Image (cartoon, rainbow, N blue to C red; front, side, top):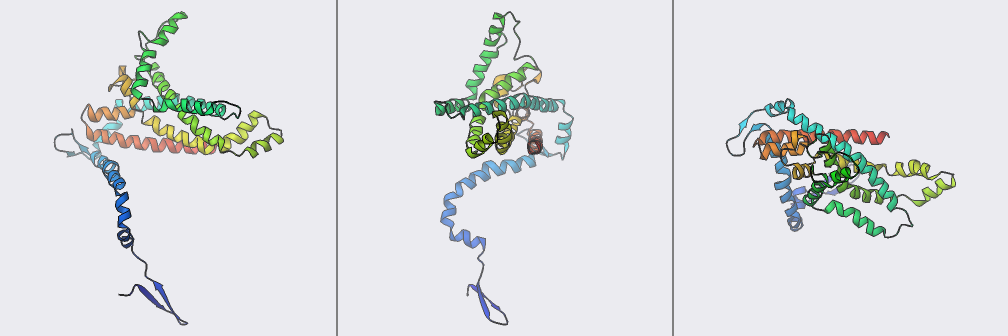
Length: 311
């Protein structure tokens, strides 16, 4: 069989090669596809399948052992009327707000300082700032427990030295959120500073020289040149911080346990989802909460994106 198509026109006969199918190309390069197949197989098993299965599970009632029962939208209806769910949502947004804004602000200051040309040992500072991001969260939780311990904490010790009454940082509904926020700030400020530093170093020096010739001072140069050109980087860090903040799990789980502390004041949405699945054995309800979390992250990230683009 010929692998060509003959097209007849009044003037001449044009012979065009027949377009080969996708399957033919895959079979022809099957050895190459075989080498990269482990990634796709693992992605299908551990990435795509859990996502699709969680959709199916959100419409079921299942304790993890017995038979599943189809309940339609009952899990979502129950979730919207559950006070603990809304408390977890409120805790998550509160911790995100008091951690993300200071974290990105401090990260910007650090990046600007690290970008000063006459600064010595710049590489050492970059490494030190990044160490906090790779430190074990269990070790971080132990350190912060020793700092904010209700009875023998280092911070309470310093407060008593200046005549102040010690505070129950871990047991107080508001203070515990600041403790969790301080852990997030300590872990990710250096990480975001390195990202900002990369963005600062990509700005052409000619723009700063032009601003200087035009008579702009340091403040005007920063707000009129640096910040506008750094906007994509700021948007990236804000979106990533939003995604990470909405999924905050390890810090409250290690510091406060599965209950989220006294009165569940440190119960975040991810920790609530985990507790419903692996403590309460309500896997269907936990799947519904996971999709609510997905929608919250998507919606809140979209709002942040629109806000940054309008500034």
